[in-house]
Image 1 (cartoon, rainbow, N blue to C red):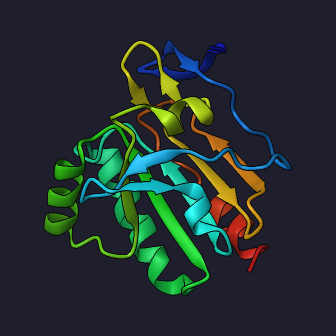
Image 2: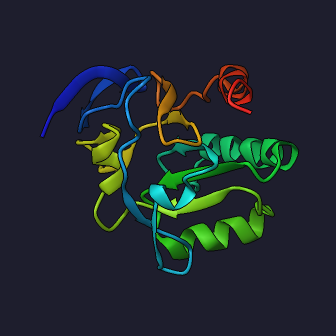
Length: 171
């Protein structure tokens, strides 16, 4: 498996990412993750929608909490042609609990804990922590990657303005 170091850091210390990151123009790699009811979900099941895929380390951290709430707020303004997926290594039970407590109901939270299928397919699996790096991918209705943002410092939020501009170009 491909290893990449120096792309992201945690408190300034470099971490190693496993897998190959797709580039703009590549077909979006399919993956299988679990929804909050332990049912398998594949990216291909969202074909026909523009997908924003936000990978985060854990919903139970302040930055991931803020990011997911922000994307939930934005999702309410975007309509049914857009799916916002937040993927972490959190267990589906923890994701379901967090969404209920946070009132998050427009973002789909998905768990990669079982096989790291998403993390490996998108090159965002952190070798040292077995968590996902903070990243955002925008995939068009035909399943092509149109935007990639890998956040350098794991504790920083993504650039929401850039993500939303990339998304709106596809609507």
